[in-house]
Amino acid sequence: MPTALATQSPALRIGDLEVASPVVLAPMAGVTNEAFRRLCREFGSGLYVTEMVTTRALVERNEATMRLIHHHESEDLRSIQLYGVDPTTVGDAVAMLVDEDRADHLDLNFGCPVPKVTRRGGGSALPWKRDLFEAIVTTAVRRAGRVPLTIKIRKGINDDHLTYLEAARIAEQAGVAAITLHARTLEQQYSGTADWSAIETLKNTITSIPILGNGDVFEGEDGPRMVAETGCDGVVVGRGVLGRPWLFGDLEAAFSGSPARIRPGLREVGAAMVRHAELLVDFFDDEGHGCRDFRKHVAWYFKGYPVGGEIRKRFALIDSLDELRALVADLDDAPWPGVGAEGPRGRSGSPKRAVLPEGWLDSRTLLADESATIADAELDISGG
Image 1 (cartoon, rainbow, N blue to C red):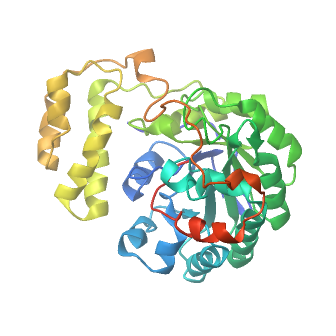
Image 2: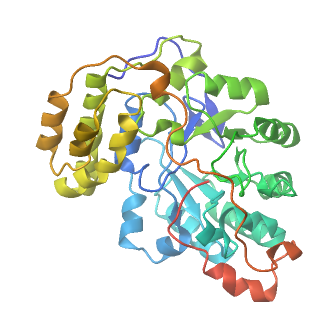
């Protein structure tokens, strides 16, 4: 199903790296593993980032974490996203990846809004503590050396406690290679509409390094529109690719000025599902594990298509590739359903009051009694 594009998309430069298309895959837990990254690359160019991994787990060489940072030989730009709350541990993890030549690009996540992380001061709550944020970023950049290091942030905790401009200035001064802004606050979670005007404000404020916009890029046309409206240098795509890896082909075409779009019929969707499952089996080196992991993708792939509940259930219970191939072969073909297959996918939810450590907002610096609290914030949870 992937098709060659006739023209070239504008490149994105991050440090000394050049990405053929100004599109970045946002890390998503349990989704953006090696198999999914390989699948997306078959449809279009971009920078494909690993699932987020914690720096503590890296330093301890946790077996599952080491698997997550593995890159297939076809991945020419090895990009890893890290999450940490302790400058020393973050620095040690960065140095390990650089010294062992495991990455060409590193990203630090300060955007996670998950309550079990923010209630300990981690994720998108952390930039509120200016000294801790500066220490982490400065240490990471220094230990990264020749490898470009970027950060991802949100607007802030809520509209009354915005942090993105100050955090961006600190990061720019520290020497980061680029900044991604998810144009929502912690309290917005993934709800409502992303505030693209904040991306424009950030781009007008930070002029020495690329600014990437994240939030509400669901169709090929959304990428160039975000760039045109905000002046940002590239876009980061998350929920829009769930069950739709061909979005990278659409974005590459849109950025190159081509009207070509991938509009798969149901049989073509089925072929992509089989390919995805095959890559998962290869990644896990276990057919049962790979097929079980694929089950969560079924609803996303079928979004908008006329597939009955009983058939969807059978797909969501597969145990083998042969079973999946047989189900795909039995699908009635149906054309691309248009608007029914477009728009937001995955989590959205509703705004939630920020869950923070007691007294967190009382001071912009990390207090002595808060250090133990934030030490527990490094959990294997991603998002931003």
